[in-house]
Length: 259
Image 1 (cartoon, rainbow, N blue to C red):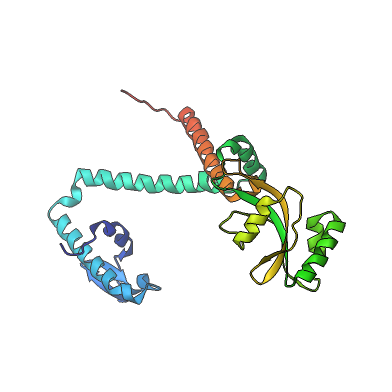
Image 2: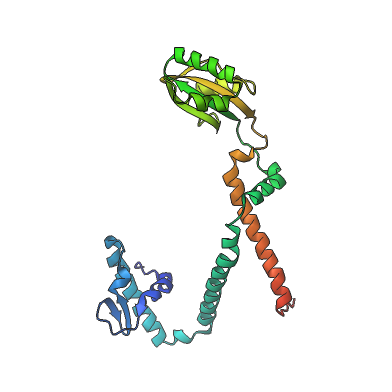
């Protein structure tokens, strides 16, 4: 069979215009494909698009000539398709757009109710680190951090000191996205609140501070999965809004169901 994408007729019909405008690129009887409809379209695609439009409209004209235009089944399908478009537009504006405006408080509330469902599939560490280009600088920096007794504040204050190449105040890592396997080994061996001695990795020396570590199978911290939680919270809110709307509509309009 030739490449006649009949289904695309529904989309192509939107480009058909009954017009007296001479600025058209294709015509089948009184249906026109206007040149402006192709503006911005990839030039490599235009020819096949036009050919498809012509073929589909020729088939449509012939089908109508043979009486298929008054087919009851087709009319029902067209009506059902129109209904689905109207419903989708309604849901998009009245349900989905409202759910997308979910607040941070709602996201946190959803996490607290469903935190048992957010389980880690691999070990993770929550660490901060400071990278120095020399061991001597790293040792000096470690002494300053220990005196400060607060890693987060200390590394922010030390970030512009000589010898500091990189500062990560706080971040989650697993063994696959941490900068090196050696850093993972050292980080996992630390106790909470402990800072490592200088660790050689790549072209630098790292001081690693462990905030927390979790085994696979543990509940995931909110900060680690906040994007996933937000997505699920939005879907949950959409479902709640839709259920509430359906309940309201059942009270508003008469309906029957006969089994």
